Amino acid sequence: MNLALTGMPDVECRSGGPTNDYQLIFVFPDTLTSVGGVSTSAGTVSSSGIGTDTHQYIVNLSGVTTGQYVTVTLNNAQDSANRAGNVSATMGVLVGDTTANKAVNSSDIAQTQSQSGQVVTSSNFREDVTVNGAINSSDIATVQAASGTALPPSP
Image (cartoon, rainbow, N blue to C red; front, top):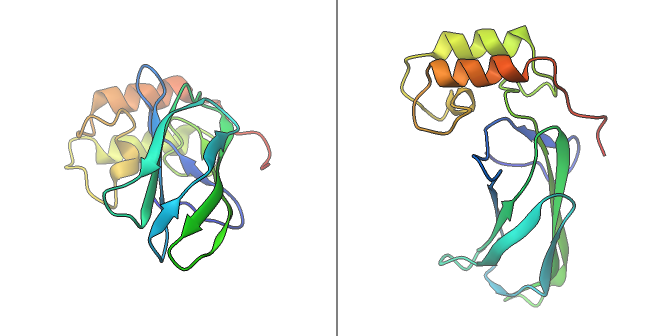
């Protein structure tokens, strides 16, 4: 899922598993040479580093609970064109919000039910909220259990 760098934060609706793990990959036009550090507004940074593709910086988060916004900041990111500065991305985390409207309700349940039994594709991956590679009753149950939850107003 691509996150917008400006405007309203996008919503991650899929479960981070039992330890609420999420991964953000920052992609840069020029190769990275260094990052001074990583900070997060929620959860903890379990690992981070420049990827095998040196245009990417990968941040693994743990302990990110549903119903909140998470901002990850790369401090003093420096690239091969000698540009440096802080780079941030924000996402909302709301397990079950397959419609990305910042609330889990009957429309999310109906959307997930309509995809049950289908192969996961780039157009329906949001309905695989349990992230097990299949859209089935476990996804429907997860969305139903989350019904009535919502994200707070945007940060």
